[in-house]
Image (cartoon, rainbow, N blue to C red; front, top):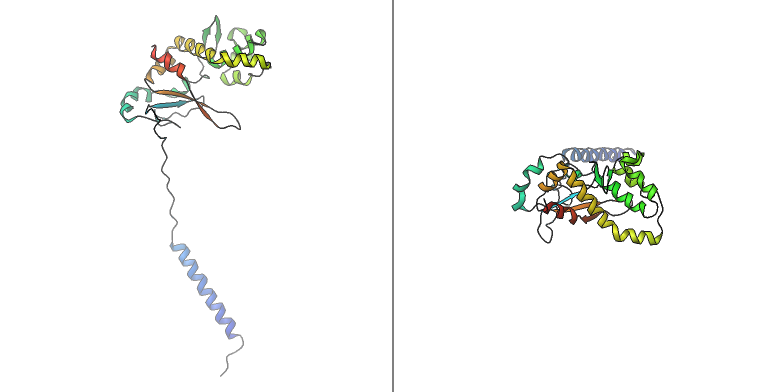
Length: 223
Protein backbone atom coordinates (compact mmCIF):
# COMPACT_ATOMS: atom_id res chain seq x y z
CA UNK A 1 0.00 0.00 0.00
CA UNK A 2 1.49 3.32 -1.00
CA UNK A 3 1.26 6.38 1.30
CA UNK A 4 -0.30 9.66 0.16
CA UNK A 5 2.09 12.10 -1.51
CA UNK A 6 1.72 14.64 1.26
CA UNK A 7 2.75 12.15 3.99
CA UNK A 8 6.51 12.92 3.81
CA UNK A 9 5.82 16.65 4.09
CA UNK A 10 3.68 16.15 7.18
CA UNK A 11 6.31 13.99 8.85
CA UNK A 12 8.95 16.64 8.14
CA UNK A 13 6.77 19.36 9.64
CA UNK A 14 6.15 17.31 12.80
CA UNK A 15 9.86 16.61 13.26
CA UNK A 16 10.69 20.30 12.73
CA UNK A 17 8.17 21.32 15.40
CA UNK A 18 9.60 18.73 17.82
CA UNK A 19 13.13 20.06 17.31
CA UNK A 20 11.99 23.64 17.91
CA UNK A 21 10.23 22.62 21.14
CA UNK A 22 13.37 20.85 22.40
CA UNK A 23 15.52 23.88 21.56
CA UNK A 24 13.06 26.24 23.33
CA UNK A 25 12.96 24.04 26.44
CA UNK A 26 16.75 23.83 26.59
CA UNK A 27 17.14 27.61 26.18
CA UNK A 28 14.70 28.43 28.98
CA UNK A 29 15.97 25.76 31.36
CA UNK A 30 19.55 26.97 31.30
CA UNK A 31 19.71 30.23 33.24
CA UNK A 32 22.57 32.53 32.34
CA UNK A 33 24.95 33.24 35.17
CA UNK A 34 25.95 36.80 35.91
CA UNK A 35 29.66 37.32 35.53
CA UNK A 36 31.40 38.68 38.59
CA UNK A 37 34.56 40.73 38.44
CA UNK A 38 36.89 41.31 41.31
CA UNK A 39 38.04 44.89 41.58
CA UNK A 40 41.71 44.99 40.84
CA UNK A 41 43.73 46.85 43.47
CA UNK A 42 46.78 48.94 42.64
CA UNK A 43 50.07 47.02 42.91
CA UNK A 44 52.43 48.06 45.70
CA UNK A 45 54.88 50.79 44.63
CA UNK A 46 58.56 49.88 44.50
CA UNK A 47 59.28 51.67 47.78
CA UNK A 48 56.24 50.16 49.53
CA UNK A 49 55.01 53.57 50.69
CA UNK A 50 51.36 54.31 51.28
CA UNK A 51 50.33 56.46 48.31
CA UNK A 52 47.46 58.92 47.94
CA UNK A 53 46.32 60.35 44.60
CA UNK A 54 44.28 63.53 44.25
CA UNK A 55 42.98 66.14 41.82
CA UNK A 56 40.17 68.70 41.72
CA UNK A 57 37.46 66.09 40.99
CA UNK A 58 38.65 63.28 43.26
CA UNK A 59 35.96 60.93 44.59
CA UNK A 60 35.41 60.91 48.34
CA UNK A 61 36.93 57.46 48.98
CA UNK A 62 38.63 56.13 52.09
CA UNK A 63 42.42 56.61 52.31
CA UNK A 64 44.07 54.00 50.14
CA UNK A 65 40.84 53.19 48.29
CA UNK A 66 41.07 55.89 45.63
CA UNK A 67 42.15 55.29 42.05
CA UNK A 68 45.87 54.42 41.72
CA UNK A 69 46.32 54.44 45.51
CA UNK A 70 48.11 51.97 47.74
CA UNK A 71 47.83 51.45 51.48
CA UNK A 72 50.68 49.72 53.26
CA UNK A 73 48.95 47.31 55.70
CA UNK A 74 51.12 48.49 58.56
CA UNK A 75 49.91 52.11 58.04
CA UNK A 76 46.15 51.53 57.98
CA UNK A 77 45.48 52.62 61.57
CA UNK A 78 47.32 55.93 61.07
CA UNK A 79 44.69 57.39 58.76
CA UNK A 80 41.48 56.90 60.75
CA UNK A 81 41.17 60.64 61.39
CA UNK A 82 41.77 61.45 57.72
CA UNK A 83 39.07 58.99 56.65
CA UNK A 84 36.50 61.07 58.56
CA UNK A 85 37.25 64.26 56.58
CA UNK A 86 34.95 64.69 53.59
CA UNK A 87 36.66 65.34 50.24
CA UNK A 88 40.11 65.72 51.81
CA UNK A 89 41.80 64.97 48.48
CA UNK A 90 40.24 68.05 46.83
CA UNK A 91 41.81 70.26 49.52
CA UNK A 92 45.26 69.13 48.35
CA UNK A 93 44.45 70.22 44.80
CA UNK A 94 45.62 73.50 43.27
CA UNK A 95 41.94 74.25 42.60
CA UNK A 96 40.95 74.24 46.28
CA UNK A 97 39.37 77.59 47.17
CA UNK A 98 40.84 79.24 50.26
CA UNK A 99 41.79 82.90 49.67
CA UNK A 100 45.36 83.68 50.72
CA UNK A 101 47.98 86.36 50.30
CA UNK A 102 51.00 85.92 48.08
CA UNK A 103 53.46 88.77 47.58
CA UNK A 104 50.95 91.27 48.93
CA UNK A 105 48.04 90.21 46.70
CA UNK A 106 45.07 87.95 47.36
CA UNK A 107 44.30 84.85 45.28
CA UNK A 108 41.40 82.42 45.54
CA UNK A 109 43.45 79.34 44.62
CA UNK A 110 47.00 78.20 43.92
CA UNK A 111 45.96 77.94 40.28
CA UNK A 112 45.29 81.69 40.21
CA UNK A 113 48.85 82.40 41.36
CA UNK A 114 50.26 79.91 38.88
CA UNK A 115 48.49 81.38 35.86
CA UNK A 116 49.03 84.98 36.99
CA UNK A 117 52.80 84.52 37.24
CA UNK A 118 52.87 82.92 33.82
CA UNK A 119 50.90 85.75 32.19
CA UNK A 120 53.01 88.36 34.02
CA UNK A 121 56.09 87.34 32.01
CA UNK A 122 54.44 88.83 28.92
CA UNK A 123 51.84 91.25 30.31
CA UNK A 124 51.85 92.30 34.01
CA UNK A 125 48.63 94.28 33.61
CA UNK A 126 46.66 91.26 32.37
CA UNK A 127 48.23 89.19 35.16
CA UNK A 128 46.58 91.46 37.74
CA UNK A 129 43.18 90.17 36.62
CA UNK A 130 43.86 86.92 38.52
CA UNK A 131 43.92 88.71 41.88
CA UNK A 132 40.88 89.16 44.12
CA UNK A 133 41.66 92.88 44.46
CA UNK A 134 41.23 93.40 40.72
CA UNK A 135 37.49 92.74 40.98
CA UNK A 136 37.77 90.94 37.64
CA UNK A 137 35.61 87.81 37.10
CA UNK A 138 38.84 85.82 36.72
CA UNK A 139 40.14 86.86 40.13
CA UNK A 140 36.72 86.38 41.68
CA UNK A 141 36.27 82.98 40.07
CA UNK A 142 37.35 79.45 40.93
CA UNK A 143 40.38 77.42 39.89
CA UNK A 144 38.68 76.18 36.75
CA UNK A 145 38.12 79.78 35.68
CA UNK A 146 41.80 80.61 36.27
CA UNK A 147 42.97 77.59 34.27
CA UNK A 148 40.64 78.43 31.38
CA UNK A 149 42.44 81.79 31.02
CA UNK A 150 45.93 80.27 30.82
CA UNK A 151 46.18 81.48 27.20
CA UNK A 152 44.92 84.98 27.92
CA UNK A 153 48.25 86.25 26.61
CA UNK A 154 50.43 84.33 24.19
CA UNK A 155 54.04 83.89 25.29
CA UNK A 156 56.96 83.83 22.88
CA UNK A 157 59.12 80.69 22.73
CA UNK A 158 61.75 82.52 24.80
CA UNK A 159 59.17 83.51 27.41
CA UNK A 160 57.82 79.95 27.53
CA UNK A 161 61.31 78.65 28.13
CA UNK A 162 61.67 81.08 31.00
CA UNK A 163 58.34 79.94 32.42
CA UNK A 164 59.29 76.28 32.20
CA UNK A 165 62.33 77.00 34.37
CA UNK A 166 60.40 78.87 37.06
CA UNK A 167 56.94 77.27 37.22
CA UNK A 168 57.88 74.64 39.81
CA UNK A 169 59.19 77.29 42.18
CA UNK A 170 56.04 79.38 41.63
CA UNK A 171 53.82 76.45 42.57
CA UNK A 172 55.89 75.62 45.65
CA UNK A 173 55.76 79.16 46.99
CA UNK A 174 52.03 79.50 46.28
CA UNK A 175 51.35 76.20 48.07
CA UNK A 176 53.50 77.25 51.03
CA UNK A 177 51.52 80.49 51.42
CA UNK A 178 48.14 78.80 50.93
CA UNK A 179 48.68 76.09 53.55
CA UNK A 180 50.29 78.48 56.02
CA UNK A 181 47.24 80.79 55.86
CA UNK A 182 44.49 78.15 55.68
CA UNK A 183 44.47 76.23 59.00
CA UNK A 184 41.92 73.63 57.85
CA UNK A 185 43.96 72.84 54.74
CA UNK A 186 47.13 72.56 56.82
CA UNK A 187 45.39 70.19 59.23
CA UNK A 188 44.31 67.93 56.38
CA UNK A 189 47.82 67.94 54.92
CA UNK A 190 49.19 66.94 58.33
CA UNK A 191 46.75 64.03 58.50
CA UNK A 192 48.28 62.50 55.36
CA UNK A 193 51.31 61.79 57.58
CA UNK A 194 54.11 60.02 55.69
CA UNK A 195 52.10 59.08 52.60
CA UNK A 196 53.43 59.81 49.14
CA UNK A 197 51.29 62.50 47.49
CA UNK A 198 50.62 62.24 43.76
CA UNK A 199 48.59 64.67 41.69
CA UNK A 200 46.55 63.17 38.83
CA UNK A 201 47.13 65.29 35.73
CA UNK A 202 44.34 65.02 33.18
CA UNK A 203 44.11 66.61 29.74
CA UNK A 204 41.55 66.10 27.01
CA UNK A 205 42.76 63.69 24.38
CA UNK A 206 45.86 62.75 26.38
CA UNK A 207 46.74 59.93 28.73
CA UNK A 208 46.54 60.84 32.42
CA UNK A 209 49.80 61.04 34.34
CA UNK A 210 50.80 61.14 38.01
CA UNK A 211 52.90 64.07 39.24
CA UNK A 212 54.74 63.60 42.53
CA UNK A 213 53.97 66.70 44.66
CA UNK A 214 57.11 66.55 46.76
CA UNK A 215 56.68 70.20 47.72
CA UNK A 216 53.52 69.31 49.66
CA UNK A 217 55.39 66.55 51.48
CA UNK A 218 58.11 69.03 52.45
CA UNK A 219 55.53 71.51 53.73
CA UNK A 220 53.96 68.67 55.73
CA UNK A 221 57.33 67.71 57.21
CA UNK A 222 57.82 71.27 58.41
CA UNK A 223 54.57 71.32 60.40
